[in-house]
Each structure stands twice: as structure tokens, then as C-alpha cells.
Image (cartoon, rainbow, N blue to C red):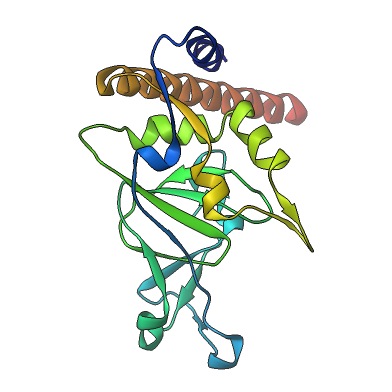
Length: 198
């Protein structure tokens, strides 16, 4: 993708400052999961519970999420609107911006909060999902039953940091390109289905 190539160029030419993620992170927290003996899962209650399997292609997929009993709310860890969710186990590095609001997160996810007047969450999310970042996570992962990274490793990731207006412009361009690609994919799928019927 053009903008990821541009980011690599920025990195190599030092056009903008390159900082570690910890330099721009105001807060980071890792999720928790209530013990199964508490029978935490219910159908369609108020507390949405996000697992790493609910994060796909830079988005939170709500079609198969779990819900937690409200009586267990104090045992949960929450992510809030505009924070970036990062998978730290299994699908390490895969990220999405929380565009929803308060969400409970499990132990395989960390939620990062940035200073809104300096950092675009969407820009950071696209950088986290780039091949360069995912390669960093895989090289620095600890492998037990599944691969995982700790928050210290996550925060050591380097990121090029253009001015906020440029971050927003890059993020907007990537979003538009992704939307066009998604629309074309859907159009191709519909055309294929139409041809199968003939």
C-alpha cells in the first residue's frame, strides 16, 4: 500500500521524528476474564466483552461477541472510545480503534490511550497493523502454548510521528482506500453469484 511504503521512506529518511510507542501513550491496560466458575457469560446483557478473536482487519467485529453479567462489572478491565485495542496473544499485533465506547476486554488484549491533540488513534492503528509492526511483534514474541507479547515489548515499538494533521490525512486516505477495496470485493462477490445463477 502506498502509504505504508511512504511510512517506510519516512522511517529511513527521518523526515519526521521516530518515537517509541511508550512516548505517546498516556495509559495502557491489559484486560481480564472472570473465572469460568462465576458463569460470567450471558446473552445480550449490557456489558460487551471483546476477545482477540473479535478483532479483524483493523475493526471490532460485534457479530459473535460475548456478554458479561453486570454483577461482575468490578472484575473487568475496560477500554474506552478512541483507545486502540491491540492483541497481545495469539494474533499478536492485530489492532482496532475502539469506536464504540466502554467495552470490557479479555486478557489477550491491551488498550492504549493517547493524547488526542497530538496523536491520531487511527494513524497508530494503521501503523500497528502494518507488515513492519507485525514483523516486530512476531520477532519479539514469547512462545508458550501461543505466541504473546507483554506491554513492555508493545511499548518499545517505534513509530514515525508526523504532525497531527498529516497523521489524520494519512489515516483518512487509508480508510478511503480500504472502503473502496471492500466495496469492490462486495461487487465482485455479487457479480460472481449472479453468474452462478445463469
